[in-house]
Length: 444
Ligand code: ASP
Ligand code: MG
Image 1 (cartoon, rainbow, N blue to C red):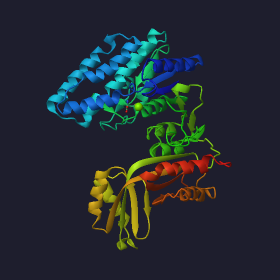
Image 2 (cartoon, rainbow, N blue to C red):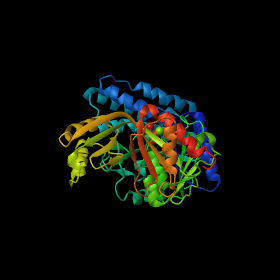
Image 3 (cartoon, rainbow, N blue to C red):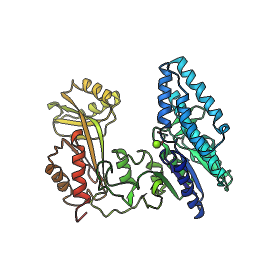
Image 4 (cartoon, protein in one colour):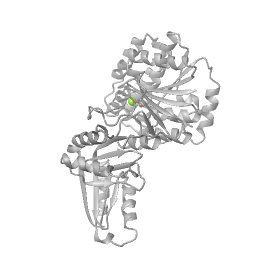
């Protein structure tokens, strides 16, 4: 069995969904048995979230998002009865929110879940009409029961056996089309694994089912050496390791949800990232052992970060100073990305302003505190960073030549990720210069 996940742009409308059908048919022709995981059609989840917020503000409008979904249903020629009960459920739910004027993480998940519930139903019905026997499933009907951590739910320990048992009972001749992104608690409350989380659903199902491969289909030619919107010369990376891809996902490469690779990594299942619009492109395969001959693998970035710095002579020679800094960060809910320390100062980055400012206020009792905003983290990722001489010199030399000032640098022993902080205004220039020296030179 293989898992094939199609993102929102891959199932945006009828022409895209027809491409999906040919892609799936090709795998079937090779003798593979696909379990298909789908996102909502492009834009539907955003529209649902918006409708939920508006309803909670007293402005009830269920019809805009329903009309959006209706366009796709009609284009596909699927009967209205397939979605009518869900439309009614959504209308009732939004009306309820508009009455109580309240939007909890729990009700936001419930509203958000409709996009995937709609899409799998119309896609399965469409495939069946065209002669590919298919059946839609809400993932909870295949044993995917989660905790109650709304907005970031994870399956309960031991879910794998339930998924295997449920899938074993399916008719092998009928292709399952399964909702990404959503889940349900044991007591029946709808959850989500987080925005853009259908990738994660795919690897979680894939590892439970011990499939031979998880395919993630979206709209770029696999993982690229840099963001193609910034670097025209960006190119595909044919193979990379799980740890490299995880660092890239976390540090801003928009290819994959950051948690996606963990389940595949522990089950050692290859993840292939492919392009629905160019199905014959080999994309990127992510495995445990991939060898990348390039000096580095890829460059990613995260904008709009905050840098918190504490300087204190009390730090000098004192035990437990860092503990106090991190304990304060924990109390204030700062998720720390990069950290650098010297004898008298510590700088760390986070991306949420509220928690950083709260921590800064508390930390003022330890020393001088500053918060810099409008900063970007640039991450250069590659498996040879720790062992090959001169890569650092090339990186910082390139930045110096385009007059970019580097404010903070982090590289752990043996690391595959050299990250640094610079001003948001410099990020385009910096990435362009780095890509040129690391990927476009003669010895790359
Ligand atoms: N439809 C969800 C979202 O837009 C999940 C996904 O696309 O992966 O966040
Ligand atoms: Mg999406």
